[in-house]
Every structure is written in structure tokens, then in C-alpha cells.
Amino acid sequence: MSLSQVSAVAKEATSNKMTSEQKVVLGSTTLGFTLDHMDATFLSFALAPMIAELHISGTQGGIIAAMSNWGALVGSVLFGILADRIGRVRVLSYTIILVTFATVILAFLDNAYTIYASRFLLGMGTGGEYGVSMALIAESFKANKVGRVSSITAIGGQVGAILAAILATMIMPAFGWRGLFMIGFLPLIVVYIVRRHMKETPEFEKLQADYKSGNKKFSFAYIANTPKRAYTSFVLIIMLTIQTAGYYGLMNWLPTIMRKQLGITATVTAGYVNLGMIPIIIGMAVGMMTFGTILDKIGPRPAFAIFLIASALMIFAFTFAFNMWTLTILGAIVGFFSNGMYGGFGAVISRLYPAEIRATAANTLMGSGRAIGAFSSVAIGWVMDNYSVSAVLLSLATMYIVSLVFMLTIPDFKKLGRQS
Image (cartoon, rainbow, N blue to C red; front, side, top):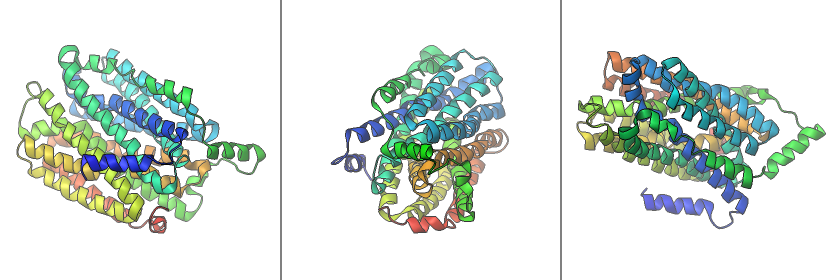
């Protein structure tokens, strides 16, 4: 699918009968993902000079990269429950403020342990934002649009990653990695938009009325209140763990992998490698839009099967890259398949869990997957220190096959079928 086709799909998904409230929801969640992911992705480009300046080991660097995902587990549960209890809009602004603070303060830290704490707080914010955004989308758009709309929002994250690459190339040569984190205040723009223009969805307002009348009660146990739902939640956590391992493992370490694969130095070619990630990030964005369209057309089981198999094959093919061009092209294809699935998880979770637990379920499942998958950053750092790039990529390819096997056992995926 070309970029022009992606634009056409986005227009189709969001045109015609879209109300002003839907426009605000789509715009605010997408911009929020864009700027928060920009802040989070700064680490991908700042990690190498941080390690050098602060004398941090590869394993410690992996822990720094992983802390945001561990923080996401705490933030996802906390903010998910708050969003289901006191409102999606209010909690969305809280999560963005936390991400902003955690990013800017990084510019003033000088040891691994305080950086761990900062990244943990950042993870709490980004982890909480995911489920709140997915709940707002699910409650604002028809079911046969949710896959594409949630993918558009997820693409905002990839746009943020591209912005991070461009800003890193422009700012770091003159102001260093600390100067890069100083511009992390930009997400506050979203807070202004959210608090001024967004209001709670009619579905959430009805839910609040049901709480007050006693017709419904909030219970965290709804995530696993039947054997089938408990198994579905378990498998989704496995899939999200592997999704996280593929995404954050590659994004945090890809510049380093590219340098090792090509045998080039960090100082002379840092800007070239940073910009070389842009086609890879674009591949991720196009993959997300494509996956959202396929998900809405044929349902989750065949959509995930196609992308998981292709992810395993293309990551294995990544080991044969021999120059910057082949590495970048294969990286874009890997990004297309392995990260195209990201937006789809929010779409399926919104249909598998009831409104009273929707944000909590999305955040808890995603947060759990991120927390466990975060160990991939540590593992990659250790493997890079002791083995080879090929060993890293082969392990990632194998994990996508494991995800495929588990995905095929979710009974409700088959029941959902084509979105209606």
C-alpha cells in the first residue's frame, strides 16, 4: 500500500459523517501519541552518548530502556482504573503532564539510578495514555471504523518517532543529549486542547449514571471473571509481550544494531544512522494503516496470522543485510509487519471487554505486555555485549512464531470475524 493509498484510507475512515466531537477525539489522541512517542523515542538516539558520558554499561543501558515499560505496568493499571471511574478526558491530561515532566527532568540527571526513576515515571504516563485513548476511540466511532481509526492514532506515535530522529540530528550535535530532552515540554499543547475542547463520551456518561443508580459496579476482576476471558487475557498478554519485545527492542537498539552490522563508528555517522531510521519508521506507520484496514475487512485472526508470519520471515532476513541501503529497506519491511499490528490490539480489546472495564483492560493488558517485554531491551543489551546481532534477530523471529501459535487458540478472535 502506497502513502497515497494510506492517505485515502485515512480520509475514508474519518470523513463523511464524522462529528465535531469525533474530530476532536481523533485529533487529540493522535497528537498526544505523536508528542508523547517523540519524547519516549528521544532515548533511542540519546542512549549511546549517555552511555559514553555517564560510563554506563550495555546492561545498564538496557535497564534504562526497559524502565519505561516497567513503569507502564503501574501507570496502565492506575490510570486505567481512574479513567473507568472518574473520566477518560481528565485522566488523559494527567498522563500527558506526567510524560512531559519525566522527559524534561532527564536533561538534569547524571547517574543511572535517577535516570531509571525518570524513565519509570515516563512509562507510567505513556502506559496510562494508551487505554484511555483506545476507550475514547471505541466509544466515539462505529465498530467497523475502530480498527482504522485506532491505527491512525497509533501512526501518530510513528510520526513522533520521525520527529525524534529529525530533532536528534539537529539538536544533539550542538547541544548534546541533554538539550534534546529539554524540548520535551511540547506535549503540554495536547493538554490545553484536551481540557478546552474534549468532553466525556455519551457511553461513559451513561456508565457513570449506572454506577450512581447501582445498576453496574466496577470490578477489576472483569478482566478474568470467566475461564474463557481469563485465557483470552493471558494470551493477549503473551502477544503484547512479544509485540513490545519486537518494537521497543528494535527501536531502542536499532541505531546500535545498524552500526554493529555495518561496522561503523558512533561519532562519525550518528546523524546518518539516525536519519536512516526514518524509512523504517515510515514502514511502521504504513504497516499500521494497512493492518487496521485488513482487520476491519477480514477480522483479527487472519489479519494477525498474516502479519506474524511475515514478521518472523522478515526479521530473519534482516540478518543478511550487508550495506546501509539493504539494512534500511529490510528495516522498513520489518517495521511494516512487526509493528503494523500495534493499533489493532486496542481495536480488539475494545470489543472483547465491556465498557465498565474497557480502559482498565486495555491498559492492564498492554502494561503487562510492556513490562514483561521490556526485559527484551536488557536481554538485547546483554546479547550484544556477549554474542552477535544475528543471535538477537533470530530470537525475535522465533518469538513471532510463538505469538502466532497462541493467537490461533483465542476462541473469541474467530467469533469476532469481520468487523460490523
